[in-house]
Picture (cartoon, rainbow, N blue to C red):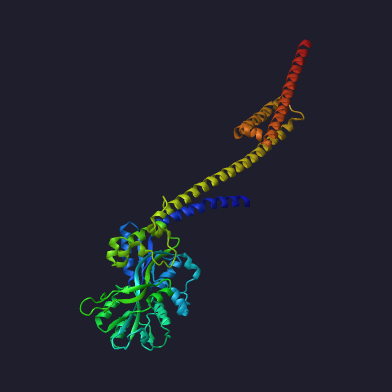
Amino acid sequence: MNRKWITLFLVGLLVCFPLYQLIISLVGMNRTIVIAGGPDGGLYHPIALSLKSALDRSGRKAEVIATDGTIENLKLIAKGEVDFAFVQPGAYQGLMRYEPSLLKESSKKIDVKLLDRVSFVVNLYSQPLHIAVREGSGIRSLKDLKGKRINLGVKLSGDYPMSRLLLESLEIEKSKLHTHFSYPEMTMAFKDDQLDAAFITVGMHASVFQNLAKSGKIYFLSIPNNEALAAMQLQLTPFQVPRGIYQFEGSPVPSSDISTVATGAHLIARKDMNSSIVERVAEELLNTAFLKENKLQELFNNGKEFAKSKPFFPIHEGARMVYEPETRSFFRPEIVEMWENLRSFIVSVCVALFFGYKWFRKRKDRLKDNKIDDYVRRVLEIEREQMHFDIGGSIDDLPKLQDLENRLTKLREECFSDFSGYDLQDEPGTDCFLELCASLSEKINAKMSRFKLGGEIQRLVKVIESEKKSDSA
């Protein structure tokens, strides 16, 4: 019994596991794509919504979830809870370096091993580091920042690790003069002369710069050694913020080109994400209509070279097929995977059918063994019944013996119908059965002959006795 259930379990496992893989592959090609955007009012969220709309138009279901930004997005991707997310490269590593205590909470902590599950898709735009300074603060160069009231940004934002990096490069210790205002709070602090400077790392089309420019109280400093600062961190590149980009009419803001450094704004994905979906997303992001809608000027001007620049994680295979079409195989990887799963399923079914057939044959053979035993038992019953006629008996018992002979004949016919000629030769038990039948048939026929002969002798005796009586009369 145990062996039977073990066999059934192994056969079921052999079929169900490839079937599960096939179903997962098919479902994965049609499920809803989940995109982690960012906080409402940020730059990530509207781009995420625009990407969702593009995917919807192409026939793929997608949804966008609002998050707190880079740290949460990176964790969601690492844990496999979303498919795509927007992040500032190096922000998590910066926080680990400067404020590791912030990441000890379970909601913020990321297992470093899980970061191997993250892959790069596209670089969307640059996020330059701005040093915004209030008029009348007495700050004219970077060395004047020491001892001033500086906003470093919200601690879990992308601003904060970049601000700490700049402070470190300027050899300025973090102090109580340094604040962590949000952008609206920072704007009000500048307006009320409660702030001297602020470090801001965000895309140039963020509304915070236009709001600061309108106040007429803000100017921006350059970083003279921006190339040296960029060389310190893999995610940074030298960058120029053009004159007048934040206020073109009247007094331009900035009043001259700003030399600074910039990090990117990256779209990342799960490493195990379906390649065709990632390829579709990368193509949508490089689509001219999408670039115009989201004002992604750098990506529009430089195309794929900018899109694949400075990847902080390994490039996903689906994105690589967009950037390097020559690496594309003739068949899409997910199609190959689906057919491989289907092939595995078919082979497993064939193997399961083979073992099932073998099991059925063995079971049938065991049933045949039981049938042979049953036939032998029934022959022995007839044997016992005919033994009652070994002593005595008369011609009147011939019908009973004939009935036993008929039952034996019918039993042989049943056996022949249950077993083929090959089985009769191959099955040792059938020889015993047939020999018993032959022996019993001879015994019954011998008894029937003896009873017939005895009956005939009795009849002749009666005739002779009858004739003697007639002659004497």
